[in-house]
Length: 340
Image (cartoon, rainbow, N blue to C red; front, top):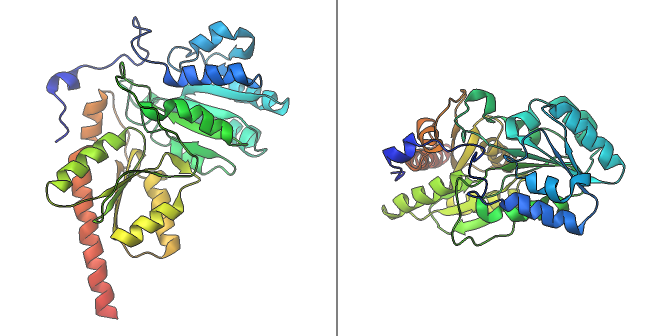
C-alpha cells in the first residue's frame, strides 16, 4: 500500500549529500540567510555539520556572524545563551538527537529557564537515517515539550521549510525546529505558511480525523485515499506546532467525528499522540482514539521507506489504527448507553 519499490528500499540516500552539494535544495538555509540579511541580530552557530544543516552558504556570505562550535553541542548552547543576552538571535544547528539529548541540561538552565530567543534547529528527525540508533531522534519532541517556555515546531515537508524560519522568529522565546531535508530536487514546490499554534487542514471529512506532522503526512494522505475507497472520508490536520498545541482544532474535530488517529515519526511516548491524548482527557471527550508511531523500542539503520514500514508508520498501519479507533468509539458508545 505504500507504493515503494524494492529498488527504492535498497537505495540509502547519503545523509549529507556528499559529492552532490547542489542536488538537494537548501530551502531552510536559504530562508535563514535571507532573514539574516534583513536582521543583523541573527547569528548562526553549527556543531561541525555545515552541509548537513544547510548553514555552509551562511558561513561563506556572513562569516562574522557564523560560529562553528565543533562537536560540542553543550558549549554551543552556552555560546548561544550568551549571544542572546547581548541582544542577538542565535540559530544553533546539529542533528536532532545531538542538539536535544546531548545538551538537554544546558538547554533547560541556560535557554528555557530564562526564556531566551535561541532557535534550536535539529535535522534527521525520527527514523530517517541509515546511521542507526546513535543518530535517530525518537524522543526529542518529548524532551523539548517538557520544557517550560519552549515552542516546538515540525514543518510539513519542503513546502514549509522556508516559512519555518519566519515562524521561529515570530516567537519571542526559545524554539525547537525539527527539520527533515528533501532527499532530492523538489519540482513544482508551492511554499506554504507555517503559523505557530495553528493546525493546517489538508483534507476535510466527516467520518474521522488523522492528525499528523512532518514526513508522516505523506502516509496519512495515502491512508486517507485507501479509506475513501471504502466510502470513509477523513479530515487530515497538519499539526506543525507540537507546542503550543492547537487544542481548539483537536477538540472541534473530535466532537464532530468521534474518531481520531495521531501519526508521528517519533516515539508514541511523549510526542504528538501523547499531547493529543492529554487534550482529549482534559476535555473529557469519550471518543475512539489510536496512536501510530514508534513503539517503545529503538530503531536500526536502513532506508527511510524501509524503516517507516518496519516500525509501523506506513499507510496500512494508519488504516488499521483507524479501524481500531472506530471499534473503540463504538465500544465506548455502547458502554455509555448501558450505564445511562
